Length: 224
Image (cartoon, rainbow, N blue to C red; front, side, top):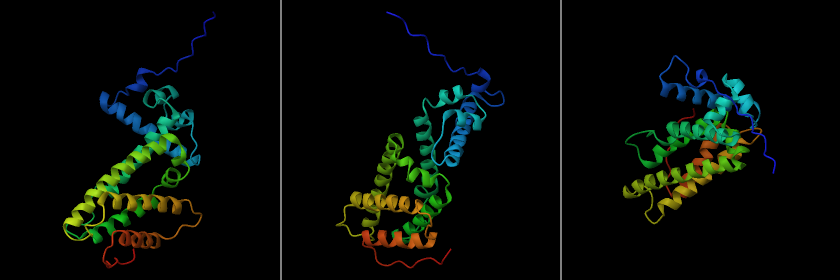
């Protein structure tokens, strides 16, 4: 039986792994972030397409170092999507838009922040359309959506305790309906050649949320 020749290894220099100007833990984090940012730029420039070699070149590192942090192209793209949703959560899901406000007023403001985020993120049209069809990105999205639905359900339950949302509505189902609907609607809008204005899409989405949650009409904020 003949033996197969060994596959050549991609070499990574110690200098690449540990740039001299940063502590070891910070060096690895800085390098990883640099590769992620480069991958995002390559994806945008390539309309959703990228290769590890192109990302490494854009990040100023070797392909071997890229594989040190991300074992495959699919893993790298999934990490870009994870970072995208980290930014979305920090901008939209986690902050309270208006402490002390009622559910309707507060969530209307949160919706405005959501629309602003997706309209302002160059990666959003790619992630919510063509990239979402790939298995690794779909898995990231499914996990994030499940987390967001759990957060929304607790949010709805608090509003029900205050009498702002009818208690005969299932909080978890309501959260799933709202967030699932928003995800599909925003994905559809981002795929349009001519998008509606932020105010118009926000008004339409809010009508859907208010109707689904059976809210009383809430006065809209002034046009932005």
